[in-house]
Image 1 (cartoon, rainbow, N blue to C red):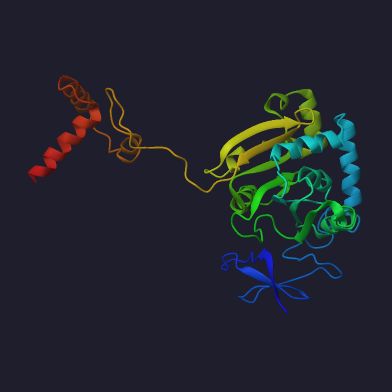
Image 2 (image 1 turned 180 degrees about the vertical axis):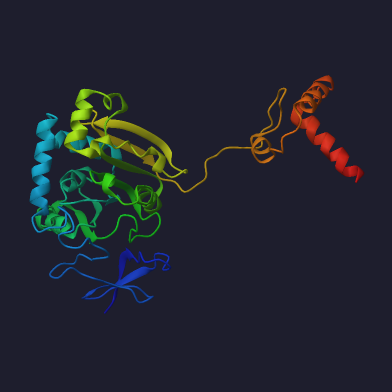
Length: 325
């Protein structure tokens, strides 16, 4: 018997068609199949080849844990305090549904569970299957009695297997600098979060005032990712309430914004009052070929003489000329 899944098909042309579940995995009505990782209920939509990098090897979680210990020791930071501050930025409420992209071995999951206060859903995804499975082993049983449901998938954060607006919020910390297509990864988080839902993203990246300091140069020499700038230009044009700040001695950026697919509320047809006249629309789309500067000045003088804006005078002159033809 097939059951309806909360996942959708991420394949091109399927328009995020809902998937059905059987004992072997998830199935798309268009023929795409996504098997469960053997011995688990974790669907595999995409994964890096085993051994492709340090995150795709058998001991990936241990390697990552060692790197995290170095980070917290280097920046004299308390891991619990940092993760609690980051999760607090999301503003989660009891019963909500959150997506965690690049979840890795699940280090943030206990903090997210506590923030959901006994009810809700967490969907954790990572393309590094070995890291993700370590998270399953570490936290599925440990957090089983929390009242919060955990869902894991090996998938590509640039092609998420979820419907539009499926989540109340999305979170990512540590990894987006390595995304092959950062704008697409952020666009996907924006797509799957409800209108007005919070998205929080962070990773290595020095604050601008540290870039040209000796400390900044030392950090970049140690790890080139510290030279990355916060990818504000990668936010969707429809994003709302965007904020940028830094954590860990101003060496890790944190971007917050509210998801939206609605165009910004800007009226480009409000007329300017003054010598030049026109609107945003006419000044942008109505630009014409260059004219002789002497003729231009005569036009401006005539407009002033008649008490008209330059745009109004030009438009009336052109209409009158065309009406004669």
